[in-house]
Structure formats: C-alpha cells, structure tokens
Image (cartoon, rainbow, N blue to C red; front, side, top):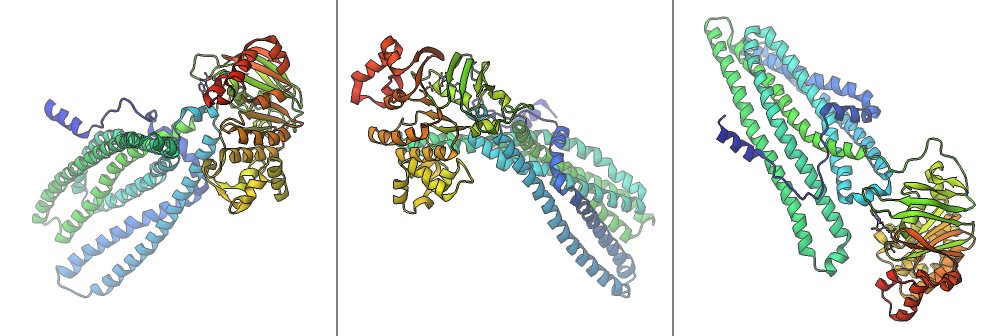
Length: 619
Ligand SMILES: Nc1ncnc2c1ncn2[C@@H]1O[C@H](COP(=O)(O)OP(=O)(O)OP(=O)(O)O)[C@@H](O)[C@H]1O
C-alpha cells in the first residue's frame, strides 16, 4: 500500500483524540489477564457449561447431515430421476429440523442461564468491592462514570468471557465437523481451500487493533456521558438558578459527539472489514471451483459431489470468518473489561488489620495523639500535630476558620482516612487495631449536609439501627423534636421523602438526622456543623434535641454556633491544621487570643451576619 493510501486508511479509521477528557481511559490489559481475572466468576454456572457445549456440538452435525441428504437427493433422486429414495429422505429431513429446533431451544435457555448467572455474580462483586473502597476514592472519582462501569461495562465482560468463548468453541466445532467431511470427500480440494486461512487471520489481527481503539473510546465516552448527566441532573437547582443549562448541554453534547465519532470509527472499521473478508473468501471459492470443475470434466467427481463440496465449503468459510470476526468482538469487549479491572484493582486506603480486635460497646474515651494528616495527592498538611483528649460523656468543640481542618478531624475519627503520623484512640486503643464495623457502630454522626435517603421517614430513621422497633423509632423522633412535623406529613411515618430529603425543609431533614443518630445510641457522637444552613428559629429548635442527644455521650462538635460551643466542656481552636488555643469558653475569652477576637467580631456583626461571616467568625 502506498504512503498516501495508508495515511488515508489511518485517517478513515482513526478515533479523534480528546486532550481534556472528562473520564480517562483505563490502562490496557492483555486478554489472557482478562480471562484470569474473570474466569472465577463462572464458578456458579460452570457445571452447566458442559451441556451448553454438548448442545452446541449437535447443531453443526445436524447441518452437515442436511447437506449430506442434499447430496443424496442430487445423486440418487435428481440425476437418475428416481423418486423412490424420497420416501425416506423427506421424513429424515423433517426429523432433523424438529431435532435441531428442540436442541436449539435447550441451548438458548441454558446458555442464557449461564451468562446471566455470571453477570449476577460479577455485578454484585463489583458493587461490593466499590462500596468497600475508602471515602478518598469517591472524593476523587466521578459518580456517573462509576455507575456506567457497574452497569454497561459489566455486560461487555460477559461477551468477552462466556458468549465469546461459547461462540468461539461453537465455530471451532463447526469447523472441525465440516473440515472432516470435506477431507473425506476431496482431500486435495480441501487443502487448496485452506490456503486462504492465513489471510483471514492477518486481516482479523490488523482490524481488531483498530476496533479495540474505537471501543475503548466509546466506553470512555459512555462513562463521561453518565458522569455529566449525573452531575448536571444531581445539581439541577444550581444549574437552573444560574441559567447554566446551555453550558451543561454543550458539555453533554461534546461527550455525546465524541461517542458518536467513536461509534462511526468502529462502524467504518467493520464496514471495511466485511468486504475484505468476502474478497478473501471469493478468492478461495473460485480457486476450488476451478479445480473442482476440471475434476468433474475428468470424471473424478460427480455433480452432486461438487455441489456438496461447494456447499460444505461455504459452511467451512462461515466459521473461519466468524472466528476472525469474533476476535474483533473480543477486543471490543476487552475495552470494557479494562474499565472493570481498573475498578477491581483499587484497594481501600483504609484496611482492617488482620489482628483487629473486638471491643463491644466503647466507654467513649476519645484521644487524638500528635495527629498529622495530608489528603492523598496533596502536599499541604490538613492537620499538623493535633492532640486533644475527650473524656467519656464530655463535649469538645472544634472551632476555627473555614479550611482549618475541622471536618478532617471528623473524617479521621470515623476512620475514613488514617493519619500519616500520630494515632487516634478510642478507649485507649488505636483505631487501626479495631474492627472497622465496630468502630463505626460506636460513633453516630450528624453532618452538615443532610444525608437523607429516598425512602419513607420510618426507613430513614431506622437506617441508624435496622432492627429498631416502631416504638424505638417514634421515641427517637420525639426526642429529636421531629414527631410533630412527621405526623403532619401526608402519610406520617410512611411519607416518602425524596432523595437527599428534597421534600423536607433544612431543619426537618436535620431533625430526621438527629433522630437517626439518636436511635443508633452510640457512645461517641460526631456533630459537624449541625445547625449551619438553618435560620435562627430552626437552629434554636434543633438545639434542644441536640442537647438531649449529647447527654451522656462523648461529643465532638464542629460548630460556629455559640449555643453549641458554649455548652462544650472544652474547646480546641484550629488554625491551618494546628491547635492554636484550647480551654473552656471562659478561659479562652480571658486569654484574649483568636477565640476572643472572633467572638468580639461576631458580637459586632451581630444579627446581620451572613452565612459567609459564620464561616469566618465564631458566634
Ligand atoms: N478530599 C480532600 N482532598 C484534598 N484536600 C481536602 C479534601 N477535603 C478537604 N481538603 C483540604 O483540607 C483542608 C481542611 O479541610 P476541612 O474540610 O477539614 O476544613 P474545615 O475546617 O472543616 O472547613 P469548613 O469550616 O469550611 O467546613 C482544606 O484546605 C481543604 O481544602
């Protein structure tokens, strides 16, 4: 091929590059590795693979028998014009068709069962794995892309491993049956027919590489499309309030167009591949036909024999062509497999020690001992040498300007991350030596963002303790001052609150979260700005239930709200990740440091304070 035409072909089949990708392509993985990784998921259905294969063997045998009957029709009925053999040929034909119908049905049902079982096992495992990853992973990844991998890409792995392999074996069996028959009929013609096989393989290899590139791009774009849809629709209020619909549409369209181009590139590859394969096939058939006709003229072959040979040849080239086409399908599916493998290769940053201890219910003694922490991939210390101690049943308030590291303390307390230096202790035991589930059982959280699930009010409260009784739920709601408003909802405790509690007010959602923490009845309580986002009235209303919740528990409260901070047994002031002051409210005021300054500032701004001031100024 000349240089110009080679360049033309490359352009025709190339996939456009995208320098500012929303979702990056997963690293390439060799097909053998893909098999090694996913073969174990066939465990549940492996015993049924044997009948599936046995059934797929019968198909080609039936087809071969049909062609053989055709030979008999030509040589024994048509050429001698003798109708007698037809009396047994007709029922034999019918029998074969019925037989292949029944077996085809069994094959379909069984192979679908095996595939779906595989998908069931793989999808559940991928979900379980992703759910077990640390918070840090989710803070860096795009949710939409994860969803696209768990749904779309998992399906493609099935193609790679089961349908693909089953089809491959089926084609090999067909190939074997027809090749055997052809050799039996005319070994020299058969050898001649096989001359083109290397050409098939060469074409398949060249094309499959192009198909893989296009498929990778398609899957990556699918991930980007889901990611953008999830982000735009998930923040629809922001998008609409700021009239950003057009920008979002453009972003969405850019990825959709990218997917379109990738799909077109893939179609072009396949469209070129089809005729190339046909040309190779034709070359083989013509050569065979030439030699066959010469043999017919020489009387070495009957007409029926030649016709059957050509019919069988079509059946031989079929599976060869299908096998080579299968390699392109394989490569396309392996692009998806790579995206799943990349997910499965993610290790949780926080791992439970093999020697993790069972502690049962903690007393609630919390200590940070010289804790320093940097978020993965960042160079700034979010916390530097932070130490404090909270005795059981007491309250520690964490205050400081925005970005000082307060929420980070909460994340470390829940062991969403491990400190780089120092240790966090619960009842004197390093958190890294505790069972993760047990640690979290001992800590209840109420966060600034309202964590409300799509479900009924009852389900949302019982999320804190799934075995809670109806009486427990109502008691928790009462203690959280939520019972009154819940009863006024259209269906009371059975009212469905939208995702993230969209059908509730901020204060109501917060009280629901308090009820959930209440029902959990954990010895340690973590409150991250529980009154932020609420107006003065709602904030005050939440205070009483909060106090009830805090009573008798070790509480770490991150707050800008004077009411919560004043109640605290002691207060720690953080600045740029360091503890700059500590003491009680009065001590800190007397000291005249940061706390006192912030307090004075707040007194000045008084009622006019805005949400922004609240982040900078302690109230
Ligand atoms: N997931 C993250 N990855 C990287 N850096 C982070 C991450 N989360 C927080 N940070 C950084 O760590 C620092 C401390 O953040 P943190 O959320 O603890 O502050 P904060 O005191 O709770 O602030 P605020 O009062 O505004 O909630 C900030 O500089 C922030 O940019």
